[in-house]
Image 1 (tube, rainbow, N blue to C red):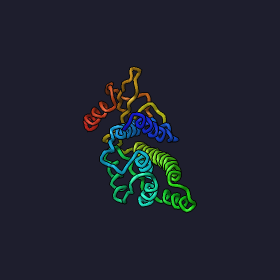
Image 2: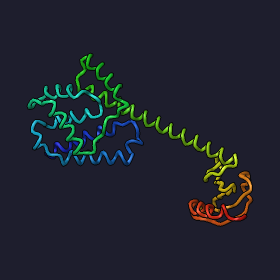
Image 3: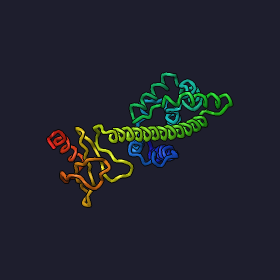
Image 4: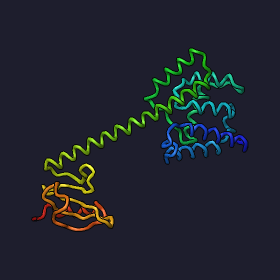
Length: 244
């Protein structure tokens, strides 16, 4: 790959990456790793074996990834470009080779129906394939962002429901692991029916107390000071079944 072609290839990949509307996605370490691998794969790629493929054809084929465009339609459009005639096997195997050469992004099954609907509509209206690809990639990015937000919201909801369940266990007198009530700086747990409190210290450690009730935020029997909550958990596991 000539140097000027490498520059254009890297620019194309970077332009495609920064189109994402999510700054969180752009800065995500996993996404950056995928971007770096894709750039390296393109720079190291040699086309000497794939004689039917020039840069124009390859870039177009890569841009169709994850868009759910029928391979036959991709082949038909590619064959209108300058170069030898491509068979279905040429196209499908080139796609598979791309998957092996670089960290490949796989299509999201949840987006299949929406992508095909958009593709069929635009094809009937006579929109050319590159324009449809750009439209689909914008759609996919928007849908991926929506799905990420929905996943995060479901996780937040699950965490809140789990917190409420654990809080109810604590309030009901059942044994439970460490947890905070509301925005209290203290952590509470119950083991063998005995209630314990961890209180943060000024030197960023934890004071462990045996308390009579979770409403007891100040008093209690001091047990010891610990660097981490895990250290206090080990102590509670040892003393919870000892005589008072």
